[in-house]
Picture (cartoon, rainbow, N blue to C red):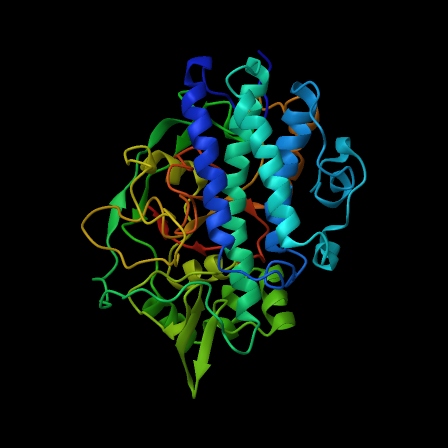
Length: 425
């Protein structure tokens, strides 16, 4: 069977897939429940999309690639939506420019919800009888929607951060008392020949394979993520003012944008003492891992600390011994925030924050994108971006694994991104 942008589930798992489909679609609805139509319509920057667009685009995916192709007699909800809610699939025709998504005051949030209900009803009834190829696409659509659940949260966060009222998506829950973790410890990583990439045991996006051999030089990984308190030390030592710490493009980026601290940090008086999150503004927790930093910032901090960023292979090799379900992930609608590290040994490998690596997002040896429109899912973006690993507090639990490859441009930091240090031995 031709491999699409991800491997599918066996046919005898159809009932489980049907339940997953319902759960994932319901969670997306729950995430936007606190929003007004206006909240869901505004686009805060070209990299972000309105919440309403996320709701409709994920539905467009199911309608376009499954309902229209595999359900005889399916009635398209609104033919105009093919133009409005296509993202980047050239094979599916013309589309609204990404930077213009915020002009969509219509359709209303109510109509978009009706669109979702229309497609859901058609697919839920059909999953039991769909051919194997369509079942693969349903699973891919579920994985795609989980990606958009995280994007939905990060885009809402960016939008609300620009509002002088500093509104919160959800009311803050009680926080544990912060503590400053002990000094950074190191754990030696595997050295020599290692295998990385999708092993084919379950779902995997096409860019995660083929599984292949790679060579790891002797190295060590920090046992936890870098904290807010440690980042404050970097700031106070002139980290954002010292060009010798920065890549040339990174130095130009901070000068052009007058970057002085991580995104969403707030200054009060002479110091950085507060930060903004999905639960509103709060005091800066020194023990929590520093979040919303760019690759440029992560790389500069690592250089300041006398270390470096881990490679993708180093991180993946270390993570294979951990359970991907464990960690601080998104479980249900509610505040998503990174938490302080606790315990011994390697911690925070999964959840809390996506970890920047020093590896460019490029194809593995032998990679071939799938044929057809879904082949545009990952391969076309293998240029100018860096790999992040591990998932975040806004990633749905169960969505990531050691081989999962997230990727962003080096200046982007509105996602839940952080860093773990590495060093050569």
